[in-house]
Amino acid sequence: MAEEKQYYYSFSEHLKKKYKEKVYKLPVNLPVTCPNRQTGKGCAFCDGAGTGFEAMDADVPVRKQLLDTKAKIEKKYKAYKFIAYFQNYTNTYLPLQQFEIYMREAAQVEGIVEISVSTRPDCIGEEYLDVLKRIELEFGISITIELGLQTVNYHTLASMNRGHGLAEFINAVLTIAPYSFSVGIHMILNLPGDTMEDAMEGARFLSALPIHIVKLHSLYIPKNSVLYQQYLDGTITLCEKEEYIERLTEFIALLRPDIVVERIFSRVPEEYAAFSNWGTSWWKLRDEFFHRMDEKGYVQGCKFNYLNGAALRCWRE
Image (cartoon, rainbow, N blue to C red):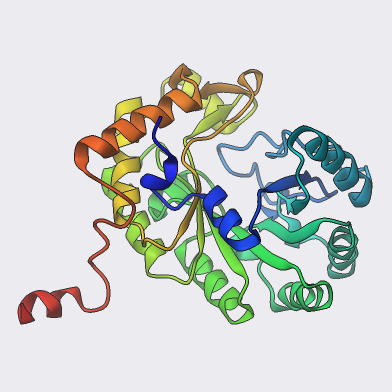
């Protein structure tokens, strides 16, 4: 079977290049919520439980969460380097002092080479970035900030009740940029209301900004979400599997070649979602994606020709 690196710059390839060996993420849950849930029902595709499927309960100390999960990964994969991944909810929504305590606790666990913090574009403040910069310098570890954008269609952002627009996202990315942290972006290419053009514009939009990683999700619908009721009522339309793969191929072709692609399909326990991946395993979807990339003769960035005065280049030629 073809290697994914032939088609896009994969996260595994990026980590091997950076750390010279395999590196594994260790999910960590913190006792934190999301501002979007405190002011309303939250995002339409969220059920309130968050996304930390593989993480321990938030009341377990950070060090214990990391050590216990690390021991399992070490035994199974003979791994020695790890990323402390604060994935669930909005981690910079914690009080600043408590946030720093948790980050420092993670940084001091043996084998941790990186801390990855997931948050919202409207929860980026310089005081939190200053904390992370101090920890980066003190412990010699890398920092990644993950931001959920999901779509560049501001109408869809509103209908999904994201609670922010494109301005907040751009501001967050530009606020992070001077700190030289890696910036990762979450995108869903098949939200109800989005089209092929939205997916393509998403790739162009991200490629023009100082971001480093993209994590692509195929939409899944949790059973306790607002979107679930709309799915049952038939008030939303979901694109077909073939359409998603078309959107994915065009997104990758337009994406700046140096941007790392961490994921191309969601992976979620079957019992958690009413809809996920069209009832198809993620690896079968991946093979269909590879096949379509071959048919089109695509690799990542093969259509990245639209920035830096593209019209001037055409005129001069």
